[in-house]
Length: 327
Length: 209
Image (tube, rainbow over all chains, first blue to last red; front, top):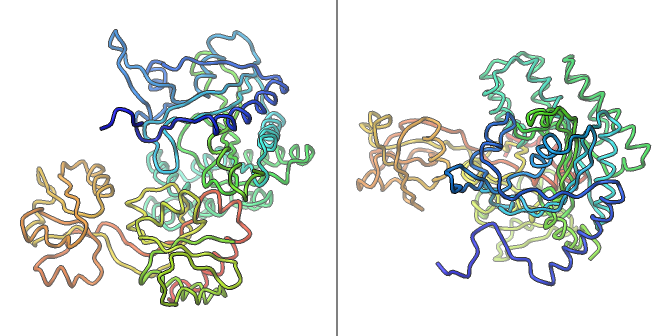
């Protein structure tokens, strides 16, 4: 092995590209500050137990691990939202906070179209609940993507409560639900159907879960989804998204949003509305975020929270792509 | 324009038939050519010819918006993409096979398994909690038990002809395989107006190929 080479999934950013990256960061810095966010830098090294012992744990396989001098297991910052939640809950002593950051996060298991070192620019709002706060953060995400120069993009909105509600109704066990979640996330209707039949979920719940992979598109999917279930949590989630959409219409960003109720991210800290920024020509999301009430409580202080992070290198790729950007 | 990744060979021909039925001017796919990129005359579709195992890669990276590939390749690649349709052709099974007496060894202490599907085989035996040695081969997998390289093989079985000719039998069918239409996670949303009508059109012809 040559000593001057880099391990897989990481890269150097040379001056030409660095200038573009800095320019994009400068724009976002202005946006973040203008919206009242304050910058934080979190420690790059943290205890493994911080992330392994909370309920919304980061998968062991995703963390870069080292051993500290005293034998404790240390990880390279795996996730900035978790770090911000830890900071807001344990160090800020306030009921409200608006934090933002430019940072690197590390994912040991990434491969394919994902890097192992990811440059992120993100914002986290602590202490605000409700559809209005959710709509505001989505509108801000649209505003940020526009500001960095993306033209053809959409923000795709989902809600973890809808899927949770359907599962509740189906009476499936958690491990079985996890298997089905993976199929739904891949929009794999064939295996979803097979698994549901095998596990013997109720007829109505089965039909609703089976429809999940195709429940995406404009706001009309929300009313379509309403017909599928009587579950209280699922219907509440849909009503919430309707309300969010109404705010987005008022803010005139509805042309940039779409809905996908089949986005069922792996069991993580998200508790409500979730969203993903998709730009033409990149093939993977350029932005990802959502509501995570309940996470701060695990660090000792119950604060509602919502936020998003922009993947900076993917944004640059979108900008270089003739179809997606201006360059 | 929609970019489509296809595996050259029989799969591409079956795809051409179904695409033509859907009103796509995919006659270009039927021509004898060594070109790797073909475009329909109306410029609505661009086809890339790649190795089967590379179809999920082109789609995951979004270079191709959609692609057609066998479920075996998808399972092995484990790429982050949407699996939209079971096209129902190129049906076969992924099975464990070997000499008839290897059946007892299947749950033994240390099984040697020869396969092209290394990732999938690892996952399969991991979920079963069995300790196996996976031996990666690139072709003529059936030779492994004959020569003593492995106890069993994990491979696709279509007619079973090659197995029979070599005195081997299917010990266990593990997965049902057929061709699948896959889509890039971003393209499905950003090019929904092109992809969704195509999908519903294709659904009509599944099972007739």
